[in-house]
Length: 173
Image (cartoon, rainbow, N blue to C red; front, side, top):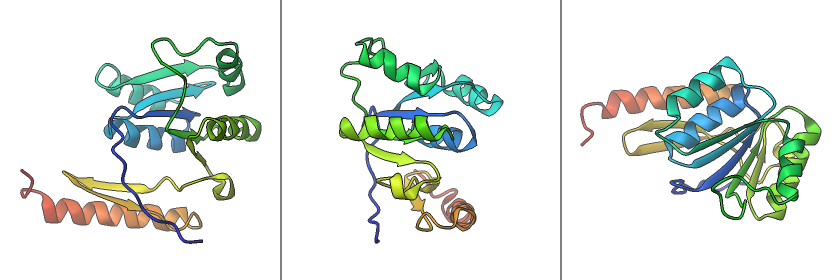
């Protein structure tokens, strides 16, 4: 299968991330840097997740629900939407809890609502790959290794980031 890279303006786009482990935290950081409106649903927060949320809280649109996704889903089904949110619809749903049932439910709910879905570690259940991001100023590169070699994608992302920094530092307006 061949994938086509796209770059979306994420400013204000609603994204649901389930989980707050290492994978989820990396994705949340990139999304907040892109000015997405991020809702995080996680049973517990890692120290890295707590630090990230504190760093971005107030400056970016992030909503946190410390609960199991099934509980979040139940509340939404009963009509108790997120405070201040309109229809509960998300542009992206990133399922990264590591709990197969919770991730499956989040993916299923996202698809029913028309969202693009990514289930961490399950490319066959995902509509897209979440790329490694290398950014310097306005230059952004997305890196993937076809969902087969995460170490290679990480290595290439770091190499591209280093190259961008070396080539573009001082040239930014």
